Length: 264
Length: 264
Image (cartoon, rainbow over the protein chains, first blue to last red):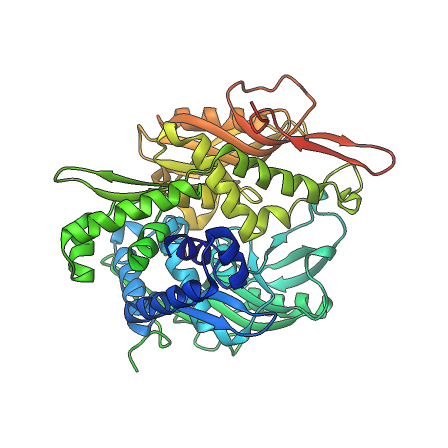
């Protein structure tokens, strides 16, 4: 049971044929099924995800990271509490978040939270924008067992032929360009875009333009932190976990769980 | 047992007091200890890591991702086989590796491999260089349960006060600068630098210079791929997993497991 748990947890969303465990552990299929039943109950009882069994020739068992609302809210509250530290306020009113969005513990929990929110979108690819969104996007990709693809600013020789689009960044109001290797995404892909920060939505809008060039579909946009202003974003469909309403003169950081994380 | 396995695997290298499980699962401590004994045996038998129990008041149990030589070699051979695809050869003799070093499946295995090689270095921080090294470094940081810190090229307003050093990149022969926020690393930290590619070692040398400014110690350097030429690198102590000896005119990609991964 321990070894099955190890395999399932080590590769979330990957389907393992029961025969693999029968062979590896050298036990009867009925024992495997019984153990999986116990496992499913335990996971459900402690709200640490779902164990799903698919019948048939192409069937098997897989682990789906699925976190309850309360667990997601607890993680978000914990991150908010850390963000409220006034020493995080940088010159220019920026907020220092780099350590939080790079901590393995936090990014694993955030990746599982996005996997819960976007479970029905069934992405083929998780897309990130260099640099700070990469850890969040990687852990989301891991939770879905799909590739991570990273958009870069400017072209790079080690990426080969690439497609670029221009976009206006909401924060800097500058025209910038985003680039993706031609081979990075196959036409028809379902793409989930994950980023650390959303202000005006200019970057996310650029992602839509870029995906159109690849004939890929953006099936979801998830960001860790969105700013309260501007209220009207350039994109309409997205999910954020935290809302950032700025800092006060006293150095207070105004962050709270977003409307998607509020108790219903 | 399933729930304990879940907690331990979800946070490698983190110490869980047995009392936590006693409380959470509402069972006797002797049952927990017995189950941990079974777990330890199962993990050892199937070579999927180690379960370590520490006695005393500050004691508890933790999971150490520790992969046997054969398992690491199998992962490296699999990546080499994928790298040998001639369509990966880009203009300029570069090799397209971006998809492999972003695949959650591969980076998890590579992170565990680095955690095995550097187990005795006990790093406090895993350091990466933007952009392509980030996923590998994140999964290594996750395996060690320590923060990931990413060096950036140039300064960024959202990082606050920062330290920069100049370095000569082995590949471009250009003087570049690398930057790290002042608050990113505390003096005395033990730092493990993880990157995707090592040619001359200029970047790694720059990392030594940068860490000296932070009064931090570089306790290890791990790279996924090193080039066969130049044979003499600017740094002497490092570990690589794959050696890349270039491409032939016929489009053959010359990669092989490095000397650290060879059977002894």
